[in-house]
Length: 340
Image (cartoon, rainbow, N blue to C red; front, side, top):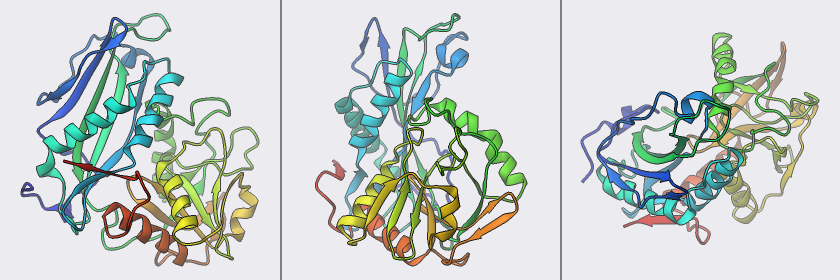
């Protein structure tokens, strides 16, 4: 029985739920971990995460399907990506199977907070890991904590998905051989000034270009780009400093296998963006946010799909992927993990 919340009025924010999962790494190994009701974290003032930002995180969701099951969407890919993120920051990877077990346990323990089918709301799952032992010299911590909590979040698009306006940013998101391809907290801290500045100037998001030549499209602070050509090909930018979005990979599979579209994952020059018919930002929170206009230092790129609604192909992609997540459309094998 779900709790009595006004699901449609929930925003994308934090609501404390009863249980979370915690495991600690000490003396070269992870402890057995488990659920706790305690949402407070106690650590030394000299913790590695506080001194040198040694932290990684993930984001995924649990859904109530049309037939009443509670499921998660491709959590194994989140687990694998977190392993790669941890390795890049010299942190001990949390094992994939234990990650999946933690997802099962946390969602099951908080099942009353999984929004009902049809509400538009979902249960957001936030796994994260950080250096917890004292570090004063610049080096990796020796002890770490892995945690996972959940929070119900409201429908991302209230009243329909209205296309947004974004700008080409003068800031760089990540270095060419840096950490842009992993989900490290420090990457997101780097983007905060740029997004606040964009909002103050009337834009919804930033388009970051490659920092080496500033001629190729990379991503926004928290989502990958997806373009549709006038002959209905799906094009996604390729770069070593783009976070490999699980939503983007899933949409490309859906485009090819379910909708019969041609998919191209390749470098995309800024100068060719004006020739695309549709543009979207894809990620866990919204699946796809449609983009109606990009402003490049006063020069406007307006997509034929316009500012009123999602483009035709973008809408098909959105409807198909959300249909799979919500149990209305049969999923590819291994994409849906049911919570018992």
